[in-house]
Length: 124
Image (cartoon, rainbow, N blue to C red; front, side, top):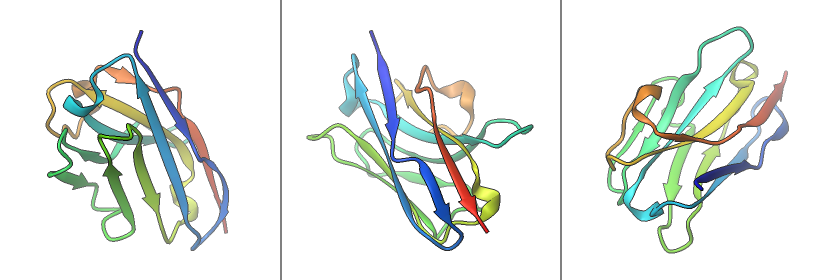
């Protein structure tokens, strides 16, 4: 049974930093591309960033470039999302997703497995 479990969410002040983690089990983690999406209240789930199976390719939504960093260590399993310079509009539930194709997809339809999400709230 495949499970993706996000952690690290919480309340942070605007301008602050937060690091999310996603631990995967039940799949060959090192061959999957991993992505982070977010969904704010009343809005569609949107792509934030993704990383290829090797870590050699990363894509970021323009809104987070220069502030967020995705990383992975295939020997340790989790994929991380470092979020700096948080803004109140970044408040959302953040989801981790896994894609068997191995390369980064920027649409949610490209991912087979999803975590339950972790709430991130940025206060102004």
